[in-house]
Image 1 (cartoon, rainbow over the protein chains, first blue to last red):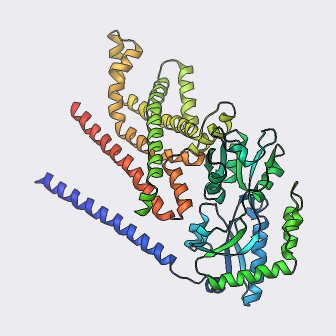
Image 2: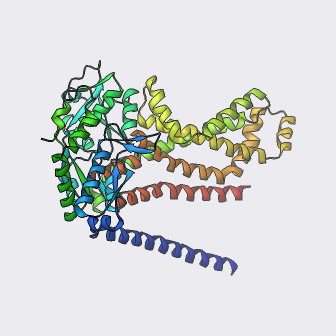
Length: 288
Length: 213
């Protein structure tokens, strides 16, 4: 009798537990769906008086965490600040800029979940991404390259099309998907962030690291033994990302972007961040 | 579901590598752990010291740091892949915990048993092997089961060093399809497929050995 009762209790407990898990999952999916439903970004930032920008924290020149102040610094951050000021002027609503560090693989989900309003994070505009989020016009012209050791004898990505080579990429970047088209025979090692990638390159886990030239220049300045081989082999300009179907926000951001290019703020920022990079003709990056 | 169908080979590759890494680490950490547990209780003092230092070092450093140490530092001198460095780190890390678990099991056996065994002419090693350890393992079994389950879950550390495991493939699929939510649910279920039978087997083993006692 006692045993049968215990058994019954066990069965009921199992069913209740399973039901809780299933219901929880359903609730979470429903919430996720709801978040995907339309929510006007511009209306939200105007109401809250702040724009939360997702930026990189591990990418020299674009967004690198300053360990002394605990704040990220770089070209992307300055662009986001300039845009926030400009959008405030355009809408007549005073807004402040806040920054949240994002990684290549997390930024899409963070935009979808509205944890961040927009993202200025070295993000290449691609048709696949445009299905899920919206991009502004390009704010930086970039292309993929490879970073190799100076004495490695590798002169371009074509030299690496051999199974004895390993190319290091970062999960969630366009470089990770593109590299297979240019060196299909080479092995690919995907790591979580650029800092680990650079360490892995130095310790010989791979012979090259591949991502956008602009990011690689940052590493080349810090590591004189390494250089960029063979120039760019793709063309992938960066855009500022917002959630899907945010026409008012995209319109304002594009207007603000055009304005800062026109009034010289953009060129000042290009000069501030890229004029010291060896081997880079920074004047080619300026807005005409 | 379409996500699972489209990426089935990738998920399965990850599943395979996770299983392989867990198996290697499990066997390795079991052997190492037992060895270090015994080292911590042998009569010689310096041996005890060595065993103790080993356990304290690997038990108190985050697994990620041990992994990066093998991946970034050791690999400068000895060539090893991300899979290798992750598995070795997992093995050393878990072995420290297993050493503690087995040591607790050994200590729970009455000291008179060792004395009795030695008095009957068995050597220290023989007494360990035939008298103490079989009983110690039975006592330690529930906590050992915990360690094994933790080990399988900890193998997700391989994702950080390109170890091709389940978590790594999950990251890749999530990054390519942008279906973060569904991907990680599938990854979670695949981990359950490894850990649930493992925990049921450990329960079964406990029951069986209890009857044998």
